[in-house]
Amino acid sequence: MGSTLFVAFPVLAYLFIFLARISDVSLDVFRLLLLMRGYALPASLIGFVQVIIYLLALGVVMYGGFTDPIKIVVYAAGFATGNLIGSYIEKRMAIGYIIIQMFPKTEDYPALLNKLRAASYGVTSILGEGVSGMREVLLVTAKRKSQNNILSLMEDVAPDTFFHISDVRSIHGGVFPNK
Image (cartoon, rainbow, N blue to C red):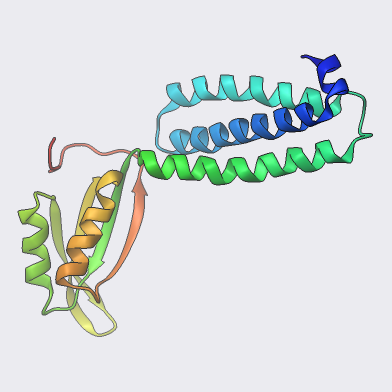
């Protein structure tokens, strides 16, 4: 893989290693998240490409033995950068579904429920019991791309609402806007 070129111009080797590791690790992060969400076929195709890139980068690092510590540092820097970029890509693509469990104050509950339903989100209301007594809990299952919009609606109506968000592996049925 151009080993003569990389020997003559070590900076090209460093650049190749760094960019290859960024690509490889970014794909790996994305592949793992796809697997966790049940998208096995796209994940396996990404894994195929990822392994090829990984082997090419590792080959350049190992060419000539471990006599060039800069290659190792660049390899590690590419790995770290690839993790950041991979998580950024995954966040931007927002593949899959989430469930947001909201625990609004009693006085905020009706307005929050109505606002979410007016925005066409499927909301299930259940009665729960906490330390301070009974309260309504709102469950919203939605596409991950809708998360910021839902939280914005909640912030407008009930800014002190306790909530948490979980990833959903699969769903069946339900009410989703723009379905």
